[in-house]
Image (cartoon, rainbow, N blue to C red; front, top):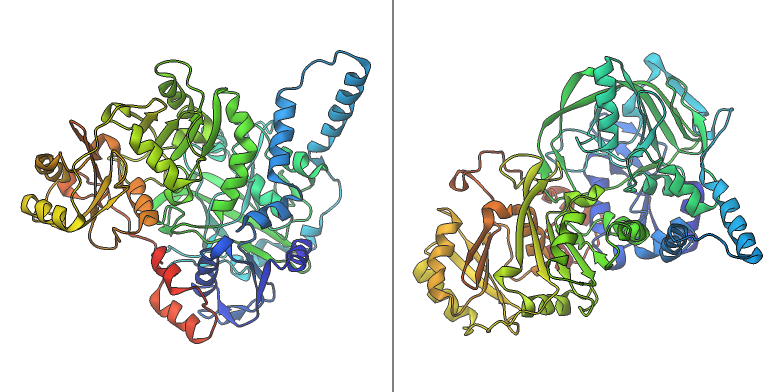
Length: 604
């Protein structure tokens, strides 16, 4: 971590903040604002952290937003992201050599692969210089942040969670948020679909405690590896060796059998009992909403070890854009070759950060026959972490660049008809709050690989259309039409909801000659002119089995918060919002320098 900080300083990618700041809200708020700046702002190093509630001052600095730009991602990888993807592609397409030179070349390539396998050392590591065992264990000595006002407590947000199967044959490195309950207990938020949760099931059936070790810091690439979407049973640290061309060097934990990189900054060791579950959360998550209180396993900490002068690594999540925008960009590029093995006609894909990644995927393909895109949809929804994607739009090879949103949206809308829609059901991320029941809900595919002949509607101006709409919908407050030059303009209508929005859509069918795609949002907390945050809101809030309406050429989406009017009986979470008094305090001290227009755009 020290080398990383020096690297960032050398490249003018680090902002050092020496003022005294609280681990409760203040430090996270500044990091949250920083990543909202152009190109992700700077990496941050807080050198004077305190916990005002307890009066404790921390000697160690806190590093944040390390991955928060394209430039910094490649600095931390030590090479271009494209070069990693190219190397994986080459490995996947390796062919038997046909001559001596080919054999020699392949021998060199295969020999270099010896470095991808982690190496276990027999000595103690740098991360074990300072030891706290038994009664000396105290999680409150670590500057763990409380990010949001409604959070259930402090959470470790960039922990590398090391686990192994019951028989010890498989190991896993994952990243899960970890709630600090007290000085020696952590909440394990591994969701039901995660590898560590599968291991936990094995220990639970056997009636045995499960070893867990959490590492923080060290080479930032360890942290990225913890997010890598590798198949079940594949050690994520293999990616470290592939990228760095040297093996991760591991040492054994002091109180359990797990191995961790020897140069991490903190190690938290322990055991998870399989009988005890404790309420975890709430937590302001990367969906931009609080995830609700739910029971999860508990880790009893048996040891904490550190380097002599550790640096605590953390991230902050909430509304987009976030640091995970850039981590996700690297992941998407690197694992594209692996995805192509299940979908060989896939040309490109992109997951917009303002849809929270799993809520929307854009994919470009070579369509060879009728229904080919639907075949791809099933392939995506059955492929690892892609199975959590809620909405997928498939385009042909002539579509514009997927990151060129304005041009791409026009291309989609000029080819779209309701028959382009494909609705099914599948598994959802545990963080999804919109479905009628947790973990399962609607999936929407849109096939615009073929052009459909569509007649454009007879457009009205916003003011005239609003008058007409209000005659039919007394609850309508305002509206705005996007992409008016296309054959399927999008009309966003803000409402004070008093009934099920299906009834409102049915009433608007009378205006079908003037409107094509209608999106309803709550008037409260939404700006109908802010397309970036509208996409965030709507993709989070809809379950297409309930919220998609079709009549002729008209399509409607209900992007409002759900309640009993919608037959929705789950708890609906609050938005993640900054605490105004904290922002004002940071402004008064000259620390908050986010432009007001960005504060408003990203609805902090």
